[in-house]
Length: 136
Image (spheres, rainbow, N blue to C red):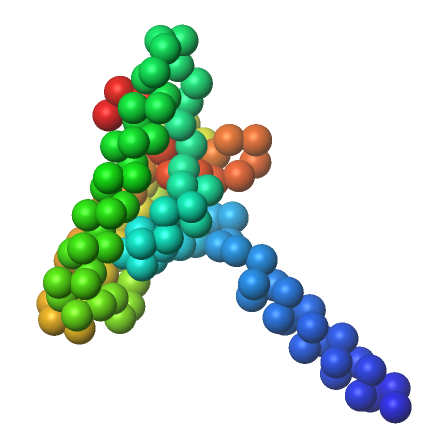
């Protein structure tokens, strides 16, 4: 009985860890963002984005709109290439001048081709997020 309880507890811990979202690393967040974007999961992808507050009215909303349009295009691209199969990290580096910024290059393999994505990230309150400036 005790072994069964321990096994069940271990399996539950693994399951909860796997379902808790991306790893809080530049690589983990970049992969999760690109994967969600190519799948068309706008809410999931946007949950990984940091949009800095803007003092100009409408600037943040405009940036959100641009991000949502980019996600829609990513989904169309994946669909036109038969769907996404795999994402691999090609390079990942923390900025030498600012350890709260990082860049990750990803290789995306589709059923009918492949592509590259470059992602900029920023660490805000201990969490890595995709960096999207309000003026991009």
